[in-house]
Image (cartoon, rainbow, N blue to C red):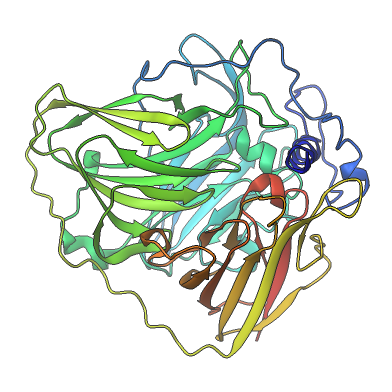
Length: 487
């Protein structure tokens, strides 16, 4: 019952802005207020079920590769892109139309490819009838360009974000982050890849070009007519892979680099192959020191894994199935042709930065407060208030944070996302460290009754940034806090 109450509250509060084209909703009332919870027992924002939820047979359609955006302008100082935020009619399932919110018309927005050391400007034009904003997840940027949850792009307005790309090569992504609405907006399609290429990694010989493929996983519930069901997520078992439900993807009998992103609102994938070989070469913040052979990879919402899968030696006609431990098959690779393979899987990739000495330790406690009729998501016993600073941090310092999931009795999983900077996972209690914790991270799983210690250095920028549970149904109703970096 507690779990149901939480999810109904999340679905109704974040559903306050409907997909209806007839009524614009531009309220900025934070979802931490009593008014925001008033529909907690009857989700006004939910899509009514017209029939039984749709169950889709796997492997009916080919997985598309997200298009790479072309710059509209290139100067000596930066590359500039333009992305239109607009509704679109998409075909997630063959023969059915799904109304979505999109970046430039696709379930996965156009991939923006930046380069370490060369800045990028992205102008977003909001053609929705509701507010939006954009957060570059994993980006090291000024506070004004971070997509703060209260910093909105109103209908008809534009906003330009400046990304300096002064960080290592990595798989980042961008998504809506308007507080109270980020869960619904992201669920309905406002997400895309942002890849940073790094000249320091050019000579490693990893697969590139058409053999380097970003893959976004989300899970949704669909009605019989193809419409997205929003609200209490009882059956989000249709896994959408780059805009198609459980597709197939033709591959050559050679090595591929797959940049895997779990962009689902609330959930964890544990991915494995039924045959073939898989190595992890990177995590949220870029390459690992060396490839790690994996039999499975676990990603909570917002986490990424950079994988090399080797189809070399598999006979033409072989199928390799990527499955989730809970949802079953999500993607089938079909080995259909041969191709020359000059790529390498080096024994060494890239050393991680040294860990500076930490000068401050802090605790972050995630839980739901069940002391009142409606469950209250809190961090350190407080709901998000954009007017309150929870941690004040001196620029240039290194800190160790211990993040606790205190929802032991309810058995509710959380994860943790830190804006502005990457961190390193130092240790865990209640569950063992795994290769999923390796490398530079910005998002990490925190199962119920466990804790994780992480270390971060807060360089370059001052201002207010947020940290929160990246199960977006939790953050959208208040499981978020604010830090201020000061000179």
